[in-house]
Image 1 (cartoon, each protein chain N blue to C red):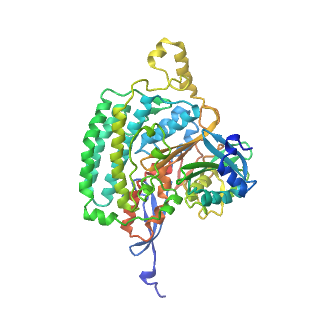
Image 2 (cartoon, chains in turn brown, orange):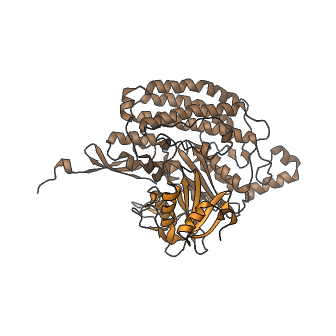
Image 3 (cartoon, chains in turn red, cyan):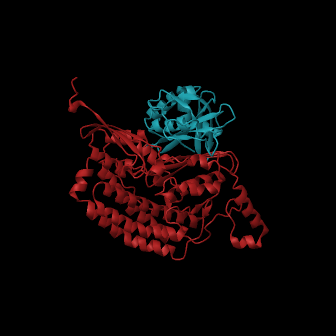
Length: 394
Length: 165
């Protein structure tokens, strides 16, 4: 029997589900011709927790902590999107102070998410020290989240109709301090990476996909902005008062791993700009809407007013009755288009909560992106997508 | 029945001009247009929207289970045009007996995984789908978790190698 020559034999390599560069549990079935990737098929679902099903068994306010667990690096973005969707169904509007705080903290979340991405992406590519710098600075940010919500990671700080609590003492000062401190840190990261020959040779020209394919495959966020499409929900479908803020949508045209890195770095600067405006213009006033049937009453009122006590009892035991209807709310999460499609049948539990998560759409392009590249480029491409597996599998 | 708000919509007119009986009804909720499309014509309508109205991406495809009503399922297409900055929601009613509908992967390749998800979690079959397998649940899973008659705590499931839960 004559053996097939090695040059014509293809090899199938299982990357994951426990591969460090997948940052979670993702399996990629690679078909290899030597070092070249001929086919790549991502397999997801290892982190599926049935969050959408669980939402149907909980009342509307009870769903908020679940949304944190969807994208655990951008939990406030998920809180915001869910809360905005339910507010639309209810016809409730959050007061200005809540709206501006939401903007302030979701932009902080964007920086948080981008820092984790930058650290791990650089770590995958051999730039180990970046990870230490990024976690060092992320620590400051998590302290701010802890001040506001009492939690470093699973914040659940937003509520239907406003915020869970008013600002803590010293919360805004901590944000001020962070804004002052952080620009020099971004410069520091760029000094380390921008002209680093290894970084450049591993990222420039790698992971290019035609922009039409990216769009048709469902990619959003920095992925398409690095391909020259300036679509950003904050600008194009403004929500939560983003139309009041001045910022730019960074775009690049190179459409490779390096361009995605540049876009995200610039986004961190723009986030700081938005945060600065939010801090300077932070309105005084209530942090929750005046909607007694939706918002839990103040403790003080509950002790003195019978009505407040009744509303409290009703909201906690029965939940909030939401008029029948459906809504699709889109926000710009750090990873792209995050959408909550909520259908209400008039009861106090959602009939259906569908989460259109950005990682799910982005990861779909992995197969096209890796084909024709080297195995090592697969790691670079995966890192540049910035997916979170909890966000993909839900 | 198409609601008054939508009757003036140029998109509705364009679809009706080409496929007169494709739109079964239409409503507008929270300024978002929802069109009920005849399931047999969904691929044609989607192709028209992509080619002539720049709906270059399907943001998501999902489904609703109205158990025990009939037709039981609704397949929901959340479409988006980046160029025109416009969104549109299409819905198709699908029967609960052998639920099936044509796949739109030929129009938007990105619908692939979304349809796999609907197949996996709702049990709706997509005809002409290139790779219709379960995506979230394990391969040997029985049932479709997002159906309303699937218990929230799940069924007993054998994870293999003698372990039961």
